[in-house]
Image (cartoon, rainbow, N blue to C red; front, top):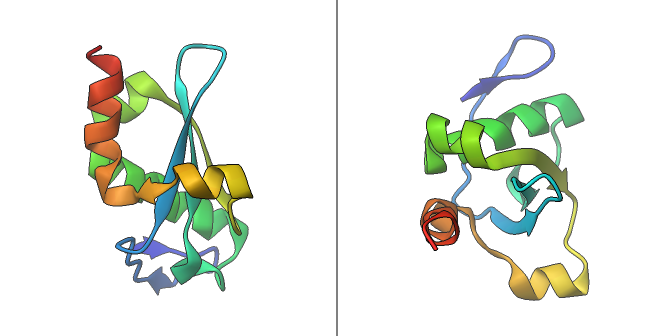
Length: 100
């Protein structure tokens, strides 16, 4: 649950969300998130919800050490859509990349 810009609680269900992980030039990973269940929220609340969900999946330490940017997108382009994966798998994906 997050609060919107008016301070109202908003329940967020990230089970249907998908992500694409992108290697940034600084060595960190950027995450693009497609989150259709929060399309009706303002951009600031979407961003907060995505960051909270990602931290919940990967943990605070991994988020701070390995993830740079987070972007909520309305939809993925064709290439990213083919590479997208359910958000719940981000933790395992990130671990496989940083341990190799």
